[in-house]
Image (tube, rainbow, N blue to C red; front, side, top):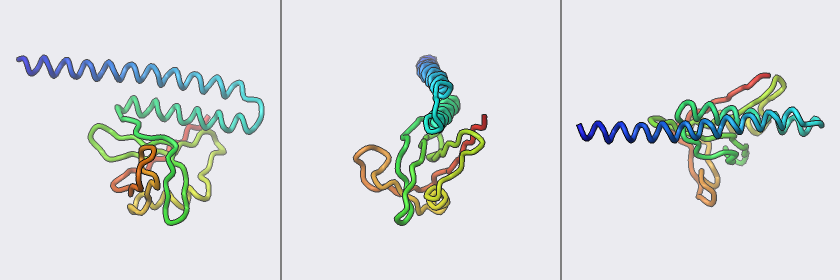
Length: 151
C-alpha cells in the first residue's frame, strides 16, 4: 500500500511539472503570434513566422510528454551542415529530430536536403554534440520528423 502511495505522489508531481511546462509553452506561442502580427517587413515576418512554428512544435512536444534536449543544433553529413530546429526525447523512445516549417512557402534549404536523409542511414552527426561544448556525436537510431504548420 505504501508503494502505491509513493508511486501516486510521483505521478502527481510529474503531472504538475508537465502542467507548468504546458502553461509556459502556451505563453510562448501567444507571444510569437503577437510578434508575427506586429512584423512589418518581409524579413521580420519570415523570422517571426519561423519562431511561431518552433513554439508550436515545442508545445506539441510537451503535450506528448517529450523532453526538449536541444534546439537549433548543427547537424552534419560529410562536409555539409544544417541546423535542426528541435531535438526531443520521448520517455520510452529514441531521439526525435524535428525540422519545423511554418507557412505555405516554407521549403527545405539545399543543405537541409543534403543532410536530413543521412539521419535515416546513421551517417549524420552533431559536430559539437547535443550539449554546448560537447564533442562530436553520431546520430544513431534517431527519428526525423518534419512538422509543417500551414496558416
